[in-house]
Image (cartoon, rainbow, N blue to C red; front, side, top):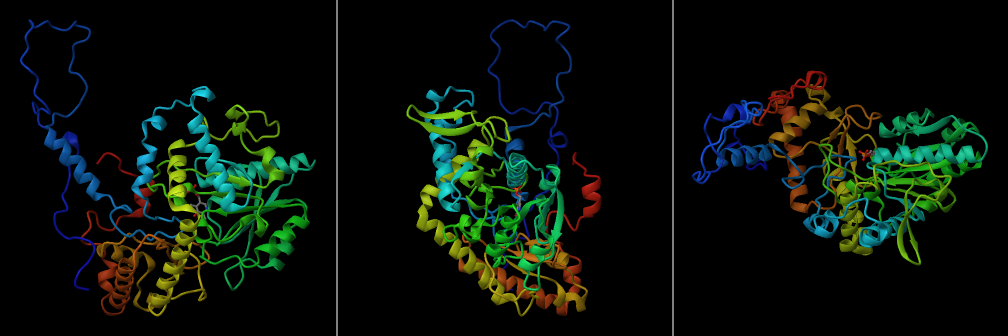
Length: 485
Ligand SMILES: *Cc1c(COP(=O)(O)O)cnc(C)c1O
């Protein structure tokens, strides 16, 4: 490889502002005093806060350099499986900063914020159209909080039928938040093994489903990037025993505009606006996990709900069966604006096209790399494909080594070691917003790394060498984070 996306030079070190400042340095000049000096009251005088003395250029360089250490989807390809790190068009940011929105206080009376209420209402309608599930709340702040909402709805539904249920079925490919959300609601998670095709078998589900089981949580496509081809049958089995079907919609980028989720038999589903509907995420920023439900489950949705009356839009608490409130006020409103703007600017045809390209790109990578990296499930995938490090085992090269080496070539590594059903998983999700040239560069790099593993595995074992920090002791970093420089 002649050229890499990453760079070698001009990666600056940067001390803390406190280490950098020098006494007496100033960020601006005060005009000469034109009044007599008047000492401060004894009680108020003192050394003042421990702020570093810095010039303007010190501050600008400090923050500019720190920003350059960051890697985001605006700096390069970020094929982090399950996270849908697609490019977020800047127009969505622009709409989110319109003063009418940023200045709206959440306690304004309804008649003074009709526009914000309408935006929430319309977004609910859009998400209902996209999923086929007619009633929606935009309150939850993340996919995982959407799951929690869903589980609360499951519990409330069974209670309303007169009998609490205690178990919930969760496939072994599920995201860790699924069993966690179920457990928070007091359900016991029962693992469902996926079959040799990487999907759920109706027989396995039938063997586990009983009348003490509240339902099943299904991610479709699942975290192997495979469409749950038996979902219809699985949903029927669960419904026949009085259970409900939860759809984890984190992978909506694979089916948006193509699959009507309600027809698959899903009763409740969350969407991750920060994944599929284009909000910058990662690093723990705000998210949004709207929940869409069937009309039968609508009475249980969180309050307040945005309703449309003859007088206009209102927030209503008048839903006696509601599971209650999930978030301060009505949700992370800034994310709702971005999703609304994204959906309107893409249009229905654009959303469908995005899905088609996301699936095409993942299959392209899968086909191009399957000679170099082992593909545990060699069949058409959806928006992501999962390899592992089996072919590299002979050279004692692991998934972690491959991920670290990728950084030296200027690519954010894919998701590694997840899903757990694949030993040494490398989960690649290119998304629809990468062009063929960049995808080809990624493929070429992965091929070069596969060749290095055979010919010079030391390069991989010792990677990364040219990044700001070398290989970290991840256990130590997690257990004893050093947060002060
Ligand atoms: C991201 C993800 C979640 C959790 O969503 P958050 O918004 O991160 O809380 C749940 N399930 C799957 C499959 C995911 O990829």
